[in-house]
Structure formats: structure tokens, C-alpha cells
Length: 230
Image (cartoon, rainbow, N blue to C red; front, side, top):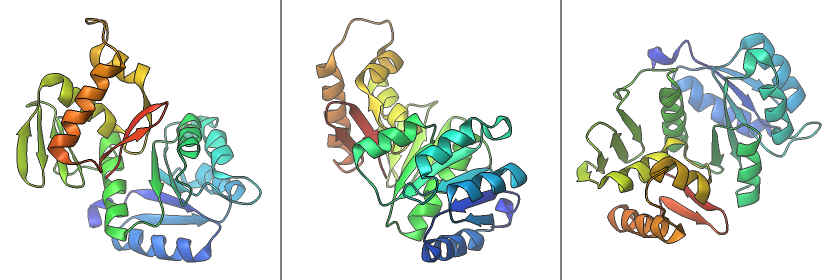
């Protein structure tokens, strides 16, 4: 897609096959793609090219992805670059460490090219890097369209009007797919200083959302909170 031609993506992985396969699919979409095989090389390229997005593996020699992400966040010219982990490690503690290091998304391998491109496009649109069908009040995530103005979720072309708190909870989780939102963060963001509510309130709202859209999108991270995946 020619509209993506000005978008730079830095792909960082120590497996040449991954660099070639993912890089090929990104170039097909019109992105400018740069590659690095380790964290040290990635930082050097990032400083020079100022990419819009860095796709970063976790397990790499010399400097792993978590440390690389932290280093990137400490560099003035790279503080706002999007960083998404693309990794086979899907343990909850690994994902939490990734987000704590400053990542914007966490994508598990293996992943189909079409789904990966969808995740990347959604991430870039949310950050304002590319335009699309969304306005500031509507975003697309896979089978979902979220209209913030009308409090409506369109799921597989079918519109569902949600009660305000259900919508705000869904929109919060969907704002950063893969991120684990803790219960305190959910309570403060969705309910704020309103009537005191507890964990049970969150659980009830999560159950209602799962009844409407299925169990596969909102995942429970025991002892921590919830995350949205698509």
C-alpha cells in the first residue's frame, strides 16, 4: 500500500528466517523495512533511521529484547517510537516485563502474516502514524470496530450497543492489545472516584463482555488482571 511508504519499521530478531519472512510481508504492504540481528545493532540503526515502529524479539544474544527496549526508552530521539515485542515467549511474567520496559504491544509467534499486518496497522493508527478508515472516535482491531462516540462495538459486522461501563472497560483493554491491565488500573480508569466498587464488579463486567463476544478475546491473568487479544 503506497500510503505506508513513509513508515519505517525496524525488525529485530536473531533468526534470519524470521527477518526474511516478516520483512517480506511488511515490504509487500509498502513499509520501509530495516533489519537487525541483535539489540546493539538495533539501537545503532534506530538512532540513525528514527523508525516509526520497532518489532523486537525477546530472546537474543548480547542484549535481549527487554534490555534493548529499556535502552531505547532512555534515548531522547527514540522515547516516542512504537515498540512491539514479536516473540514465542508467551508467559504472563514475560509480557508484564515487556510492558514494564516500555513496550506498546506484545505479539506472540507464530502469527499469520495477515493478522500481524492487522496488529501493526492498528498500532500505527492508534498512535497517529498512519490514517485509515478510523476517525479519532473509531478504531478497528481485527473483527472489532470500536466507536467511542456512540458507545457501540461492531463485531463481525454486527453492531452491539453497550452500557457505558462495559464499553469503557472494553475500550480500555482494547487500547493496548496484549497489555495486562491490573485491577487497580482498571478501577481507577473506568470507575475513578465514583461509588466504591471491588474486584467482583470488574469480574461481572468481564463476564458480560465475554457473553457478548466470546471467551477468546479477554484473557484472565491470575493474580494480576485482564488483557485483550485478537
